[in-house]
Length: 331
Image (cartoon, rainbow, N blue to C red; front, side):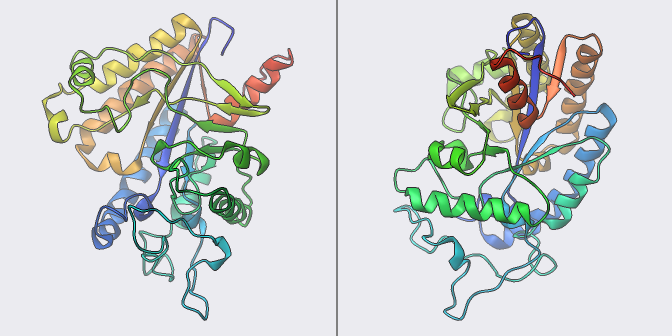
């Protein structure tokens, strides 16, 4: 934990299905992919149970619906007005929403996945990845649009008996923190303060060299950006070997993750890994082998009393207790 000689590991996943990339990839492709993604999610949940690794699943709120319909004006989700409007996307944000149900459009609904997550032996956190994957950090995203989206996410979660405490920003673009705090969120995943493994830098030569050499990222520190709202930065995007990354040695990501964990333990700071479930579709066996290697290492350090493995929610709760001088009360 922060302030002690123990390190902390957090793992968060961005569960989006079709909502995450409908502006870049044909929806038919995303629909088919969502079926394969489900298979990998079940496989991953079993791995998490095996090593007792709790995870924050940041879920797009629309996936919590069992279905939806258009109103008599033909509008989808009029209750979330005003809809997001961006100069780079000319259509209504919900124009691709089929407004049907999970049986007919599995890429747009994920209630089955939600129930899988909630029925595991390990207690995972269900967090938010917004309601419809709008880009909060885009300057064209208004405060009213952000508020409508978060309210819809909170309502969708509440309908399933879930209270949202953690938030992961779509595209990792942070924005409208005051609204987030006001609507009950206590933790979010921000970007690491130093140049790291975000979308914008992942193929830069220096960063690629760091990946080839399996050099660890610097551990990070949480920051209370508003009273009671904690930034828990993500500092390792656990990527599959695809594109130019095919030149990377197999096992390099896992070695890098283990070195990151070791550095977090030495410094008493945080290692925060993240990825999308769809990342498990590429080079799947290698991804799972790498993750299992990381989990074996993390579990051993936890058993030795050197590492805490927490969800974002539990970590933020510990930070709040520490702020007031109370013991962290780890689970």
